[in-house]
Image 1 (cartoon, helix red, strand yellow):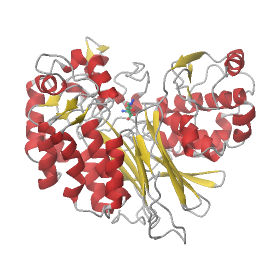
Image 2 (cartoon, protein in one colour; image 1 turned 90 degrees about the vertical axis):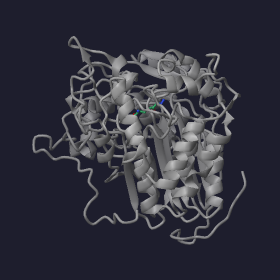
Image 3 (cartoon, protein in one colour; image 1 turned 60 degrees about the horizontal axis):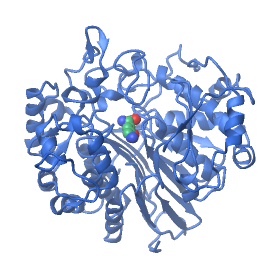
Amino acid sequence: MGSLLGRSHGWDRLTVNRGAATVHPLATRSAMRILQSGGNAIDAAISASLVLGVVDGHNSGIGGGCLVLIRRSNGQILAIDGRETAGQAAHEGMFLRDGKADPKLSQDGPLACAVPSQIAAIKHMHTQAGRLPWRELFEDAHKAAFDGAPASKSIGRTIAAEADQLRKYPASKAIYFHADGTPIREGEPWVQKDLASTLQNIADHGAEWFYEGPFAKACADYLESIGGVLTRQDFLAYQPKERAAIRTKYRNYEVIGFPPPSSGGMHIAQMLMMLEPYPVGAWMRSRPDAYYHLLCEAMKRAFADRAHWLGDSDFVDVPQGLLAPEYSVDRMADFLDSRSTDGIEHGWPNGVLEREILSSEPSPGEDRKHTTHLTAADEEGNWVAMTCTVNTSWGCKVTVPGTGVMLNNQMDDFSIAPGTPNAFGLVGSESNAVAPGKRPLSSMSPTIVLDSTGQPVLTAGAAGGPRIINATLQVLLRVLDGGCSVAEALAAPRVHHQWRPDQLLFEDQTGIDSPWAITPETRQRLSAMGHPLKASGALAISQAIHRQGNRLAAAHDPRAQGASES
Ligand code: DON
């Protein structure tokens, strides 16, 4: 890791270096190249996200969306909601057949995609806070698509896993398979000429080419021909939104999270409030059973609330009271320190009857002019936490012919019918039902933590559906309470409970070396407390940056073949 000392702006005499972390070495390299050639962290994040869409397209891409949290060097916080949006023809019954929910329809094929939103979001990021010319931010992604890059292990694995669905769509078949029908494998050079040309067009002609011009037309026409419902009008209407970030105190820190349509910021804040009265750091080190028991109980309560109350706050009333410290006390009133609590249901935050609603509109006084999981920070004090997604691997598996763009399957993040679990086993209520123009509830949790002087000290976020929320929480706790370095925090094993199903997942045999391994003895104690334990592989993939004094340390999750530089 090389140190790159730079100027200090807005850092109160701190001289810090730069850093970036993503799940792919080419994307991290791109972010660092941009930082080294005069770009800021916003430019770096945009460029890295575009590269990821080429070399890591099963996870994210311009056919998907993103949520972006930015802390600018002047202290301003921007929460940019680049979430995909349901088309005007979408409706509550669209995934029902003969009165029964059919999750195949919300997961694969033309009905599963919502309006892609990453290009609109990065345009907004760039306009508000970027520095380098727009075109320059597309260079690395274009090169990776045009010249080709070796297919990564996860590209090879996910093409093979989704081969049957991908083969159904001729443009997907042409990109993800050789002419003889065999799938692209790990290590093979992989050229994506159509995607290169799409990127070039957006670089040359702007986001309008995507939303108002040839892409919107090609996409809407093709979807119509195969039974989809998105229209050119839906593309024209798409707007990213600036939201008011969720800002709460945790010990001596201020934690900044992403508001609805994500549930991440809300539930990380809620769980931190539930945990704050307890000696989290001491238990982590010397009483791991007590630590994991406490975590699990907070997770169950938060996810029960998520299932009932959370949805797109432009459509449903999300109670402000969920964030009240008294509510967390109330929620934990039945916590037993040596027994799993049974029968947890959602709570009733204060103010529900008075309809005190969380406002996700930035306040009028806020300056709106300036202004995978990947992360970048520059020497001026700009920090970016950005989570991009097409939802599950290769989204809806439909590639728009002639464009190389794979579309998302974000409609599955809606609750397609009460009680019907989505691809991540999440159930939801009317709050997250499908409606025209609505954004599906997300778990993406880009998070930035400020120290007591208001300077950024830590940022984290993750991929992994609902596991994002709990993984991000655990990374924060390992650093803030456990005193771990950010690399140790990412390597530490994780647990996950999402209320339904009633199951405490713990990471086992991930092959990652950590002094914090969850031992058989800890598991036995948790079982004895009544927790239904289940061994799991990797629980989420997280990237993070931590500042210690004037040094930034960027780290990528050892569960993926990522890269970090600082
Ligand atoms: O927004 C969400 O919560 C999901 N669409 C995220 C999907 C995800 O993290 C997939 N990763 N494994």
